[in-house]
Length: 412
Image (cartoon, rainbow, N blue to C red; front, side, top):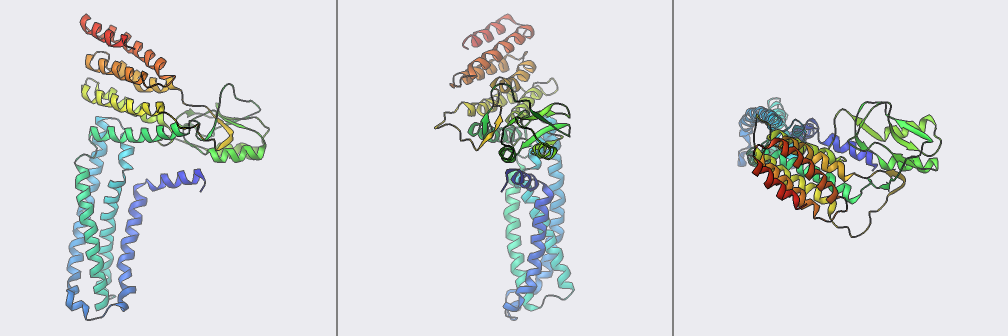
């Protein structure tokens, strides 16, 4: 399956209405299946298992599932609002995409429609005695699914949308994107070093952020053109209709330029998938907001620094072998470690300049990262350390606090 199509399917599967619709269709088909399976069931089974009471059971199920669905929707909306106000609005997107919450809501909607279709069919006289038996068995199965889903949903509600849960979600999304970039630093292409060719350039027709690049499509275009394509705009970059998003070293017609442009998905907002910097930026936003005067929660900022360290440490992990190049005609610039460290720690050092505990933890985090062995980590950590120390000198009121921070920074 082409990578661009796979990405579109993944994005579609994250939509709440898609999963709810699938479960709703499954519930309707389950109720209708009783009609088709009725000839296989002996008619005298209905009285033996009490299938005659199925109408009352479906009435109770329909009314309760409608109430549970309404309650669940209200709870999810409240969790989105809480997470946005306590952390950052960018976290709400991860909560909306949570598969457990979507499965719970979809199960409740599907169960409601199953009950509704069953009640309508019973009142219409579609089910005979055998059909009632099949419907009764199906209802027992639906109730079992509802009970399991409710237990999982209750467990999820205990932490859904809380600050710690939000940090864990953003860290997981950032770590997945960073792991993919560690495995393939240039998204499967060759590393671009130096200036790009200038035979032909491609610009976007939209203003927004690059969410996804179909590198496989770029490879096919370059192979047909007998040349190379040099990517200029990485996922997460803001593009307009003037700056090039890619360069070609061969002459290209309008169709080729359009195909290259279509390989770049540009949207209004950034995405976590191919953009590890976005996850780091969101984690840094959570720390900065926790240090604002309105919230004043240094503990959350310190916890976020630990998450940032874990995400960045992925880049320093040892490799057994060089990354495999799947697209040799596509050249992609690697992530700049200096930019990653700046995204992660510069906002925290600015917001936490007047908090000694945060300043000490920031210096220790940078010291830890500098010891991981990545060739660019030490210089980037030292730069952020000096920047944070300079801000603290102008903000901390006590000279002894500044001296303590300097002693920690000197270890770098």
